[in-house]
Length: 613
Image (cartoon, rainbow, N blue to C red; front, side, top):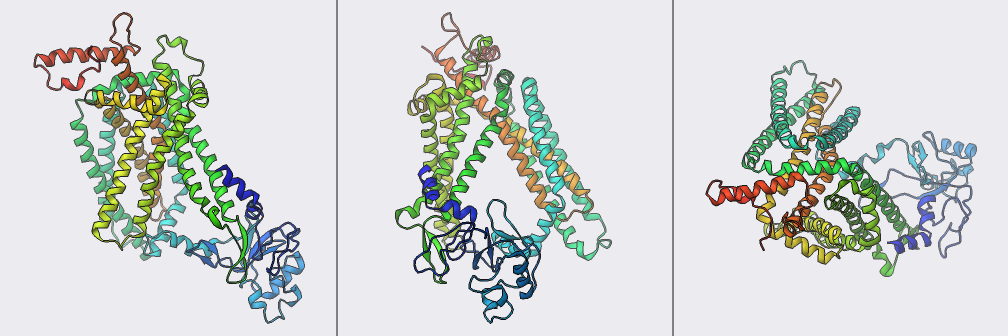
């Protein structure tokens, strides 16, 4: 990827991207060399620093570019120019000729070729794009067709306009609700640290109340709006009211189905909920001793944003790299020929691999810090900053392990994305059998990716414990997981489920606040899209924060399994685990004895992981 970036910069793509170039291959803002057989090339544009398009609204939706002659100009027209006289006056006052280089400003109103060589009238007011020296229309209405073409699921443009107006009129509420979801996630992380013993039951009760309350409010709002007299609504707002009523009905039905399913799941898992309390309590202690764990999502997000910015910039460089070639219209385009034209494929693979690599670095960092905490008997002897110590070990010893693990995920993700692209391209054209096969392959690859992700995370934990390579760690982690699959799966599954309930709580709280605010806002239009945006953002924020807690629970689970496999609490083989987990082991042993006497039917779920010798 470094070679790709260096190649695009070395071939002049950086200058062409930042400074821009005209339709004859001249880079704006500098002297240019003459291109063979290309008219108007090799011009001195030292004082012409901006790219101006004669018809900026003529968009090629298929190739995603502007189908217009581009010129280098001294200044962008800040006001609309309605006639050629205005264009001529602008050139005389500002010294910026907006017509072709072959036409002098004095000939703008007299030449018969002015209608072809000059910009399309009226010339929209434009301003230079910061850092990229392109004159872009201030009024973006000419890009409306392009935006509507991208949103293919909207068949009625009036629906699109109402949705967009709903977002624009509710932007302050959307921003406030997004901030609310961030605050709620931080509060939940603090609560997890200090009341982990009762957290499971609190979350269960709050989710029950929240789901019931949200469902009840939705049905109440639906009944209220349905009974409201329609005679008082003006005709222009009647369609908006009907859209909101239909949206409320869909939301109410969906919330009812979700509430019923949630109750059924919690009814089935009610006997297993108590098994997670011990791990949740220890995880709360981990966050107390390692408070920097809370900020891991911020550093990971910051690293991803930096890499994505670099990736997009290099992709733009590639779009302007290559040699000058004259197209059918006689203008210059820059194209890469030979094997190098496929560099962007490797660049896409790099996007997936390095993104997975960054996420894997976070997992290894968290695993190393938690392993250090677990296997330190006297917590007063912990390093001053276990997180930084874990990062140091990662950089010095485990980058290859993380690279290999992320590469395996990439090998599975790429075929799945290719199949998804083929499925989208063949939509409506393939027969039922082909559609079923494609969807089955996509589903299988998705399941394989999730399984490998889980195995990778446990492999990183095994690496942090034993300092072994990736393959050895993955094998050891797999053996441990298989040996304890039936005995401790409840702990891991229910733990993840309770964290999912935490995410649901944040989404429901934010969504309920959004429903109340958007419903009683007087100047709102259609608030379907604003509510969806808020709920998606709330879930994303909650997932980012609670996924760290989920990682801690999973790492503790594997440490607990290894601890009980090789230690039994006897002298010389003392447990490393916390007292709460020791109590869990003792209770499990008692449950086993009762099960042997026929006292407890479900005691097999509490069987300890102690390996008999």
